[in-house]
Length: 180
Image (cartoon, rainbow, N blue to C red; front, side, top):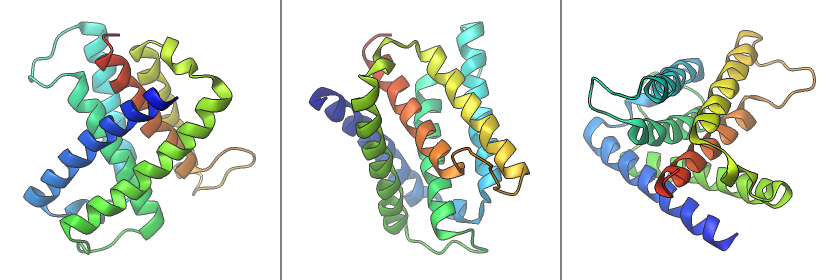
């Protein structure tokens, strides 16, 4: 498990570093996005990964890895939006936004640690394509919950699904780093 935690930490450090650099370039304009807009953005990225996996080539130059990093960051941004609410104007500095993102990534890491204990690191036997399919399934669940104004009868809420998406994307990045 220590190896997994070190790998996980390396991936989220990479994601947070890119997020911080983009926040310096663009500011925190994303704070105006509704969670449903982030859902659609992540859906596009996950669908693109699936297409790249099926077709085997990219015509715009970016591959699967940058899209998975983007999914981690957008999913964490969605959790920030759920926690803090949507604003009309950016209200965080780049550093405040990075700290908020890291808070969500660390919470997802803790969830992963607990689930990993119970599931025995089953994800290590999974294909990257399966992890992407799980991300797409979770996004469809989120869309359904959003369409129902956040109401569920027996299911986890939107936040739990976003945390799972972060973990699936991190797992996919780790599996890719391992040559899967």
